[in-house]
Every structure is written in structure tokens, then in C-alpha cells.
Image 1 (cartoon, one colour):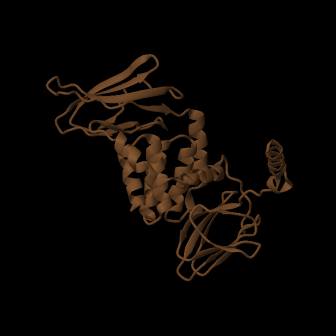
Image 2 (cartoon, helix red, strand yellow):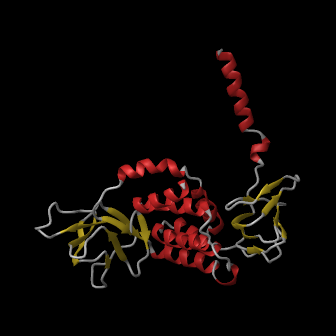
Image 3 (cartoon, helix red, strand yellow):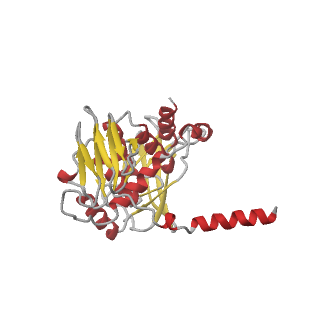
Length: 311
């Protein structure tokens, strides 16, 4: 029996080192949106149904029906719209001069689209158990943020609640502000600077002594990105602006990918919501949004998206 197991392990090891595995090709493009009857014809002659997020290899042909359309993003940054009744072959010579985009845009898009692979409804029970009434922080939450126009938002507060917003670092309380009857607080210019690259936590609590029991939100964490990352972010965003991306859900989806790649989770959520608004029937986009909410600890919003998937 041991000899049989040894031989099986040896065969598996040989297969893992075989040339077939080493020669696996990298995708040249990705299907950013897919509406109507879209087919991908492989060089082997095999035809498969086009779906959102599918990777396209050299030699693949994208075919659209009479009322269909698709949007492709190539690894070199080229964006292509495929209209109704069209045929586009994916290849290195994509019909435009090669102009490699700065940064890792294509890689970030591929990584971001992987968020569509969710178990969906299996998360529902766990989220129901985590849900608690009271003050719940919304933004920023488990994310990096940009230095300009920093806004803190939460929910669960009443119109007359007296609240205290506390921001802390490893050194202790960084800034504290009392507010009343609001769920939004803009970080004031006169407040101590939030240092890029430093991790902060923040929380909201009631201060009215007559309020019993008092309420306090769980803490959320954030970090301001460095000026170097801000410059790289701006270069990536500039590369996908203008005429390159005219499609409905494709442009915000690519922006969301870039923000997520830089750790800017709240910005990624905002752009993904725009993409969902442009293509509300796309279940994969709802799955991505649900995963982003879960990653940010925003359980109410995540639960709502998972319920949509379950329906």
C-alpha cells in the first residue's frame, strides 16, 4: 500500500513539472462587460459563452449577436468596444500602436475581477449573527484614504444624539470632536495633520449622561496614502481617462480596480456602485460589491448585496 502511494506521489510530482504546465499562456485581454449574445471562439474551434470577467488569449475571437455588445481591456492598456454583429480577434497586433500603460492597471483589473468568485448566500447566516443595533461606522473603514477632503460617516445615530468622534494613533488620542444630531463629520483644516503611512483608528460614542445605556461603535481603521503612492495613483487614473473608456460599466470598473490595488477600499466601493448602476442585472458586479463591503466590515450593505444574489 505504501509503495502504491509512493508511486502516485511520484507521478503527481512529474506532472507538476511537465512542460504543459510551464507553457501556460497569460491572457492578452479581459472581457469587462458582456451584454446579449456574446460568444468566444477558441483557436481550437471550441465556442464558449462570453461572460463578464473572462480572460481572453491570443487567437480568441469575440463574436457579438445582432443586439449584443462587449467591452475589452488589453494588457497594453488599449480599450476596445465591440458593437452588435461584430467580430474581433484578440492578438498582439490589436490594431493600434502599443503604448504600455504605467503601473499595473491590467494586473489590478484581473485581481479585482477575482472578487466575483464568492460563495454568496453561504455568508448570509454569518452576517445575521454579526449584525448589531447601534452606532455603526461606514467610512473610512479598514482602508487607506487620500489626504484631501477626509470625511467620516456613520449610521445609527438619532437626530438629537450628542456624539463624540475620537481618532487615535499608537501615541494615543490624535483628535477629538463633539457633534450633535449628525452622521457625518469633515476633518477640519485646523486639526492636527494625519500623517501619511500612519495607521489610525476611530470610533463614535454618545456623550449625553441621560442616554442609557450609552452607545459606542466598534473601532474602524484607516491610513493616509503617501505622496509617492498618490502620484502613482494619479498616473494610473490618467492613463484610463478620456476616449479610451467610453463604456457604461467598464470605466468605473477599471477605476475601482485601480483604487482597490492601492488599498483605497472606500473609493473602490464608490466606483463599483457606479458600475452596478450601469449594469444592475450583472450578478458578478453585485458579488464584487458584496465582497468589498465585507472586506470593509460594512455588514449591513454586504448583507443587502448577498440577499440580492440569493434572490
